[in-house]
Amino acid sequence: MNSPNDKFKLNNGVEIPCIGFGTWQAPDGQTAVDAVRYAVELGYRHIDTAAIYGNEKSVGKAIAESETDRKELFITTKLWNTERGYDTTLKAFEKSIQKLGLEYLDLYLIHWPANKENTEKINSDTWKAFEKLYKDGLIRSIGVSNFLPHHLQPLLDTAEIIPAVNQIEYHPGYTQSEAVEFCKSNNILIQAWSPLGSGRLLQDPGLTEIAEKYNKSVAQLCIKWCLQNDTLPLPKSVTPQRIAENIRIFDFTISETDMKVINQISDLGGSGLHPDKVDF
Image (cartoon, rainbow, N blue to C red; front, side, top):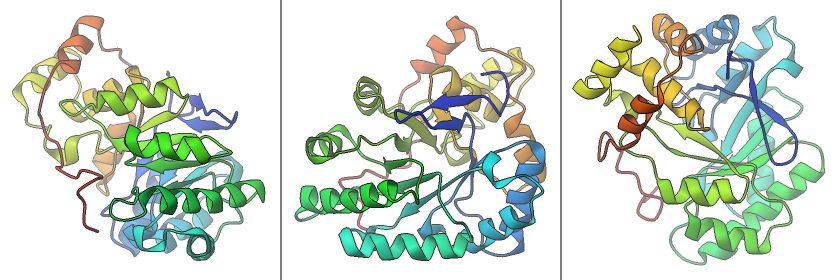
């Protein structure tokens, strides 16, 4: 990957820009509008939001105000947990698309797998609604988020359409190798949320030492590391300097030796959010 416009090809042939701009914790209002608009000006073409973030309207406003053609942008949002199920999913999608002010989505994700009762049926019914929206041409690609192999396999057993993406927590010190290998073997792209460990990695001495070798920040090192591991990073920030810094990662390559060192870091900066244990 040599530029933010380089793309991964999803399993349905749709191309997705190789770095995304995350909007989690970007408050609804002018802050989020300005952050997304600035990101697009800098060259980000892939914007990731979610219903639960509460900022879909602001993301939509930034897209509308952008001078970039809609067809050049790749917009993702996610279904929240309270809206799972066939009919409720269809209604939730309609709300999201209206808030975003868009005619179609590039990617729609189930935000978290069901984890209490009737989990397989709930996930399957929700996915059937996703498949309908996809077949109706309202979404270019569909996927999941925070699904582990024991959530994915039952879904694959009943699905007509294989998820194109699984968006999971992924960063140095928290690589979820079992989920990554399962997805790669099923041609499902891994997107990395929290590629900087929500900032927890930025002061790590080992990562700092490696980053300094390349005259880069730890944030830039972590984002590049994701890409070199064939995962799609979704760094997020509302600070102009950091938004710009996070996309300046295409002018260096991490050596094989340093990749191995970073890959072997253990237990560093995980959020503690486990799909089987979250209670929201």
